[in-house]
Length: 225
Image (tube, rainbow, N blue to C red; front, side):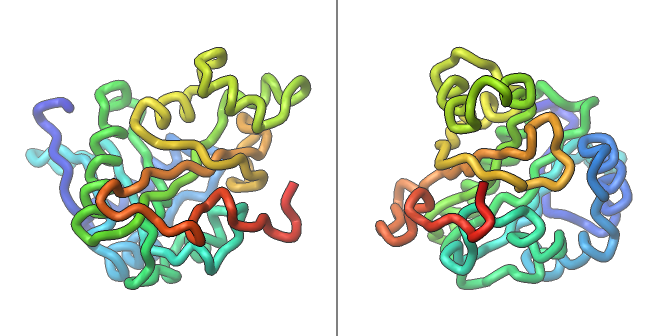
């Protein structure tokens, strides 16, 4: 990590810089509002991480998380459902799963390992609060080029085997995430991924989940593709 950066909890002064990062990283998505970021800060402050320069508070990256009971959802529920429309107001303080709702690094600070360090902070939280796992979803921004010739599942397998490099999923796999299953419609306007994402998880080695909480065994939603 660049020596001028440190990872710390989210602060209200970070809201506007984070909104600007959203516009840069997700140009086709609606960015967070200040009200939504304040909701994140209020409902689960210890789960919101920021990589910033302490000398000028410039924000380089963020990782937003909330606790959920995943059995309350379908495995292929969209991000909007899992985050209550981006507000995180469905945060369950007793939820056994830490859901990695968003991980963003400003392009000016990418390729310095910030995403891995922000993920490691979330893993530390999983262990500190004795949770079972960290769960997220990986975009598949390379998949659109292959969608006509292979399924999303076949694409993920090819990425796992090193036959295809995916700009997002490959990095997640190197960072210790395990793929679970592909889901369709996770993000509304992700044309690069042809609408697909991969559910990923990291299991807490000190408290593995019981079988009934195995994400791969949860039933898909009624409109799953």
